Figure 1: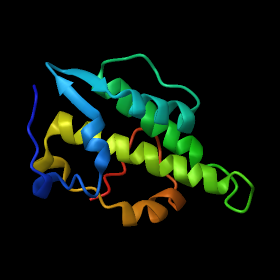
Figure 2 (figure 1 turned 45 degrees about the horizontal axis):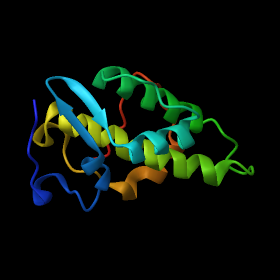
Figure 3 (figure 1 turned 90 degrees about the vertical axis):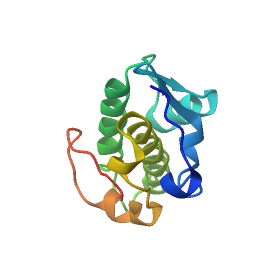
Figure 4 (figure 1 turned 180 degrees about the horizontal axis):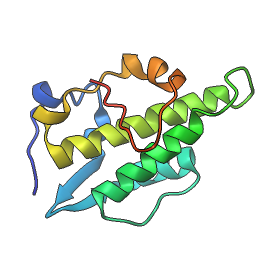
Length: 127
């Protein structure tokens, strides 16, 4: 399933990661840039073409990043990594479930999401 997206509908300006993700016939494709970002932010990038497996991995990585000491040396890196991974999570969900269901990405809500505890089984739908 390849879904075409209109910039005004899904907010590519708000989430440029939409250009680095595609789902064809239920199989996830990520650009090399997206894979490198995941590797830098999460420690590695799993070799999977399953959207749900990648979403679960990104969500778990975000939860781990939320457990850093906010006053420590790692806090800024953890927050920036969290933002990158959440952008990719939103892009995958948008391509998988559709823009109408997922909604537009709101990066201004990332700080609140980062400081709010969550579990890897719940999505932080930032819309």
